[in-house]
Length: 407
Image (cartoon, rainbow, N blue to C red):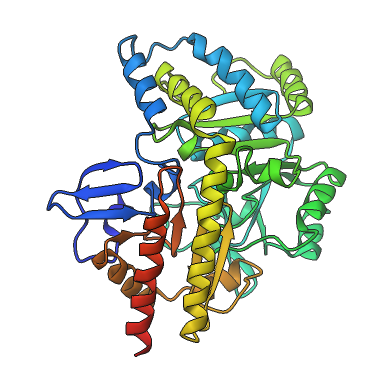
């Protein structure tokens, strides 16, 4: 996969083992891990409750196209945690979003979707568009893309309420799909009133709202949605929900579920295009149950939040000390330094804020000082297993890099 070779090191780091918030490579180097599988291991590598659940389920069978008792428990856990009553299990967030968009189109009778420039983190085809000189175009670099994706996808800038209103007023958009904070770019936080306007406009125009919390679950046990009272019609959570086991969940509101049930009574019989053979296997159920019950706890999130605030303040102090025109952004346990002034308002600003050669130099400097961060952007995660001493080492290593760069 390209992200295995996207690191700024001259060769990929080959991992021997990872535990908690530490990685060891095959040469014996040990690294404080703030990448954590780009959120896939956001709660640490092999959390003990998840490891126990995997061992227990491995003795009972890994997949059999039928539910286990964990499925019943998990349904109640998801509804209580995220506030939506109906759920389905997929293998990746991309799959979950793809299936949720099918439901959105089915119940609205509309075929268009809307995304924000900068998009979200996955690889759903319809989201692979961007704005160039104010015009929607296919994102560059797509392999084998034979369609003009802009024919069925509208795109506007994040935080631009006027552009959003204009894009929705034709009432031809089935669904807006977005992260509550743009994270697949230099981080862009919502401006005051944006989410309220987004929810109001989608309701007024009959457009469904899909919130993807795969990255912003760093905010708290119920994600950004619960922390800030968002009310999505569809909700997706991938990567970390099963403690590192490939799994995702997507949920729908009572109203959407009712409309979908009515649609299913009238549609022609046949395959819906939703689900894969390994979706909702018992290993996923067991790992997700352990993650939700024993890992994604208020206590663990309090620890993550405390250290993330410490990291945010430490990085900002270094930036200020060396007079760098940079800033730090944070959403819960997710922290990012951005090599440009901020805060950023939209995806276009996030794109211009990238400084690839500079960022590569910083990443390599951190690795050489025993610290690993995500190769995409400058993202760092705090896990329940992360210690204050590791945060201190990261801040110190960042200060060393800043001193070298400004010497």
